[in-house]
Image (cartoon, rainbow, N blue to C red; front, side):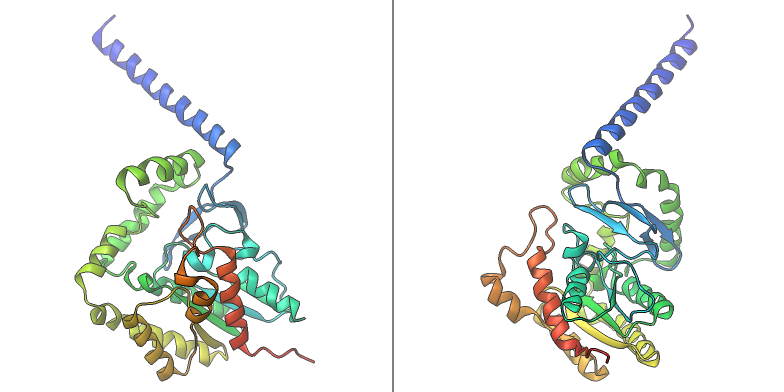
Length: 322
């Protein structure tokens, strides 16, 4: 047998072994953990969840449903006869680690129902989003659904995401994202990422959304520079909402630094935007701000989202229609 033939056989055996390994891994993970939620590339938002699917955002997370409009379900189907409230943000708004009904949006909807108020609450949160992505999606969805309220849930580190990236890098990101499509459908690939690679690298790889560049941007740019380019975008978004008759509401999702708090408070006063600060309620219910996070995700427990939803509802001043 020639060396070339032996080499071909070895390559073939290696390929078959890999196929069998990944095939067996896929079957086992899907059997025990279920299917992953699928994201897809978007020319404006960079990524978003595929519509009309059920699965795990993280394999340790409960099953989530993304409805036919691309929103995470709140437990009730969209009713076009009802007015809507749009909620925009990142993984905290999405509600990583909790059930659909336990998210901020899900619990706000439950509070509204308990008061006899018929509303759709649209959970527009997407894990990994930065402020520009959040506001871009808010504009797209508010154009489409014309809600009464648009709630922006602030998470301070969102101001650093996808900011230190050139146009060429953004184009390459979208191209690479499409090439990696097959891996987004694989439960085994997701398991390997979450349980092997993330732990070996001591960080979450995320969506390929330039995590290292986000951190570099935060560490090398003072706060004043980081918000300088965002301020016009935030103001434009607020003007757009008001021009559509939509009431903008801002909520501190987590307890902010003094620097960030002062910036948002000043901007809210300038733009006449209702600002909700849940810190007093957080501190009352969680002394020392401890035990607020779930075991795996580092995101909020359902009780925290309930407190936040109650704080938001109390400021919305919704009056039942006669």
